[in-house]
Image 1: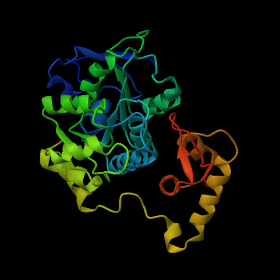
Image 2: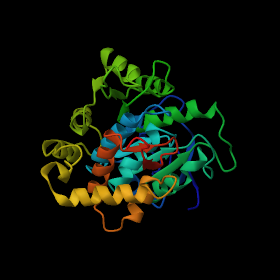
Image 3: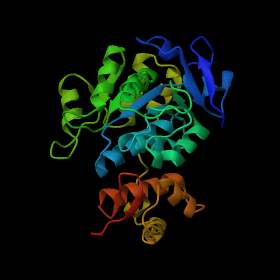
Length: 315
């Protein structure tokens, strides 16, 4: 899709970013939406930014994907930075829910960093928005990512830290969120798990715990976020975050799905979640996500730094 320059005074510019310090004069955007449809479908909806470690653990990736999936299916827009690890998992979760997600780039609007996320960027563009402060042919450089991060936090009504060490770069985004007056939440973690230090310290220091979508929806409603009436209704009819695997009730359909997933992943060098879904036509997206998450938690599947799934060597 062709990139468009949207001035800050334009109706298609996200109103939240007009409020932040160092607000951009405009943004480059790639999206199938335009004008009133863009505002109604994206910027006028409750929005949550999800961030965390690039070198994320399997548990962190599963948590981010599950949380984004559960929020997106209830109409919440998911924002992140398209980076490796937690960012990519958050975008994937929203896409699996057929939801809306926004990716903020740290490079020109025509590029993708990291390059292996080009397909993920294309999917984000089709369902939501890719945006950048920089025009075409602007390379990714380290100094651009902190500038990018202030937009990630600024676009959210709430920012959630899923995983990170004491020196995690995601804490810079948290600092921007605090400066911007955004609500900060964190996913409580077992202190023995990798990446538990940053979220647990945030909770100790006063951040609200995000133990599931219900906590986040309640916070959005209390904040009076756009679309809060819809959010409040969604919060009152909460179901479990991810549908319980039918296998737990002895349903043979889940056993068959597990066998199909493992057979597909045993063929090659690994595939993305989207490629897996496309290779299993007719499979319910929620059931597939639940099965993949279960297999990851059990250690039967692993996900590499590029987000590709494969059967664990220990399985």
